[in-house]
Amino acid sequence: MHISDEVYLVGGGIATCFGLSNDPDCHVYLIDGGDELALIDCGMAAGDSLERILANVRAEGLDPAKITKIIVTHYHMDHAGGAARFRERLGAEVIAPAGAADALRTGDERAVALDVAKAAGFYAQDYRFEPVEVAREVREGDRIPVGRLELEVVETPGHCDGHASYLLQGRDRRFLFAGDAVFSGGRVVLQNIHDCSIQKSADSIAKLAGLEFDALLPGHAAICLDGGMAHVATAHKACASLFVPKNLGA
Ligand SMILES: [Zn+2]
Image (cartoon, rainbow, N blue to C red; front, side, top):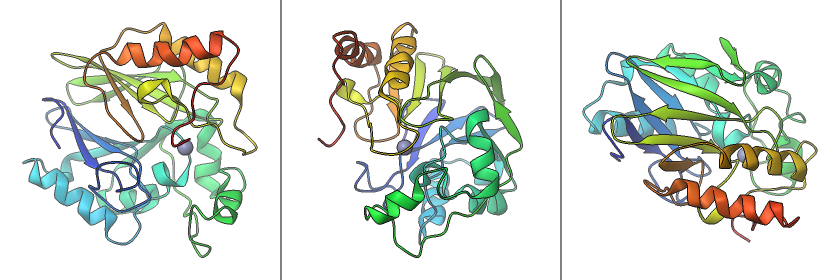
């Protein structure tokens, strides 16, 4: 799905909104930097999801062989569980927030809360987290080139540790890829897992509320092409009132 000259939505399960790939994939975005493409998150690669995502890239007239980077927002399986398979299939390098890299490399199911997510029925009991080599760890302010474009790293822990959002200046818009830090309507996903923190989430939302951008492109639910800052401001206002913003799906 064409979002702009530089950004496409190429994956995401039905549960997450668009049905471009299999559940429980998050939104999978493609950045077109000309001679280089990159994915923001890649979903879980369950069933034929990987092939569906690559077919969506081709349907946009783009060549999946030009995907050189898989940039993940955080280590939850619906965002990064398929990274090993995508890396192997595409020969692309995986780029992750520094705080997420160890868990991705070791496939530590407890660190990424897969143990409790399985117990809660989010994932199949026999699902195994495939470890993946992380080529580059990124931190606050780092830049990630994608062809003629460049992403800026904004560390946004709270939903979990090792979570980053990414800013991209496009020709007509500035995009915020927010992962699971904040969603349309100022909603959040705060879960009963070991590394979820209301205070860190509020700090991250306050940081995002201070940024300039047009489009809010989160990991699930509605995407906002313009006026994205208003959605973050709604979440920020709730936090500033000492309340927790509404949870997505609640
Ligand atoms: Zn998540």
